[in-house]
Length: 505
Image (tube, rainbow, N blue to C red; front, side, top):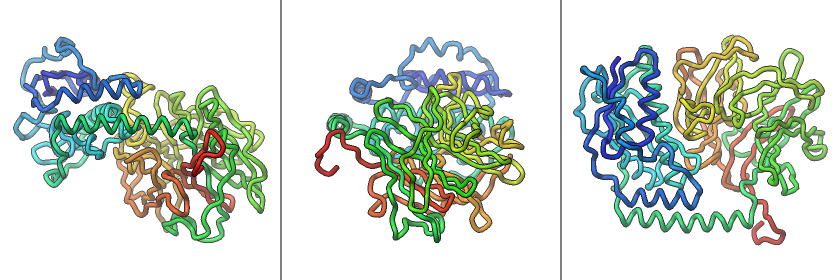
């Protein structure tokens, strides 16, 4: 299949070249060609000034958004003949069969993406063919509020969605639905005063952020627990009236990602243990007695890379753990030889993938891994794009593997509904999945979703609840939910002053 990509020839960017390369290696596609559009002329020069200013203040590099010489695209201008599919990135080609229009919040062009980000929105990308929606997703950002970083994340995820949609077309997968994007609210137009106001807010925000970090250790997470003698958070749909007991820390480290488990009649709580001095987390555990934790958490697993999200479970007479090891580009399985310690690596379940918060579940005779994944293209395993918005699935006949990626990966692109937040549990005959809402920032709230479909051909979920931080759990974040061994645990952000006596600490 000959695919022709129509792009802004006046402003070719690195992401255009990356997109062409990624499309060209899809089995069943070839040749791939490029056609230059004249450009909308709506991209303001002050936007590039804003990007340079943000890059300077936040020590960022321009990657996908950076300009390239027009000659770098010459290799893609050689294909002859009529294309089988036109991918229009500019909106200057009339609608028709085999013409895909890409839009951000219903408008074509990179200026529309920038306007959406400046408005503080979570951009919705759509691929539309002659009024029919072929693919859609909401584009997340690891550092919302920093326009350049968010723009880079959105471009990387744009590539993800385009490539996935083309793979689906080649394989004959994916349904189609009428596109209702005409109802979307379009962000305000880009203007010099608006960009100047954004620059002023950015400078003020950067100063406040640096002052905060001078006074407080940030981020500083904390775990909350409670005895579970009645309905849990999933059944309640809200924080319990009894509140939560905070797992103490010494202020020099934080604990996060709590996973309780009962083994041989005793409850142990596994946590991410993050010393502020090193900036690299390990896994620690603490035994619980009738009155709570019996001392502080003690290290049980450390690697040369960062570890977190200690997903623990019991199977075949042993206790197993799949901690997050995205910094190593792997998902690894460990077995306890002297529980709660003595962990040895038994298998690498996935490799060459930057996967966050891998969560396992056995369903319908197969084991499944849920995780959000950075875009793993030609530069894997480093990847690109947001850590929170693209949900991928893998399945295997045994929890030890071998795992096969779901053919529809990513099965979901949405920072509010993708990233796992704890064990998937059965409730009322349905699988309920805790999710981190990261639409406006990492781990802002918990979402509960019922899994409606989980099989090798498809995935679907329906949101059934949302739990936010508030009076019952102070702070501005809440991102893990787990129960086991007679206790229920959550975590969220708190304040850890660098100096004693700070007001409001």
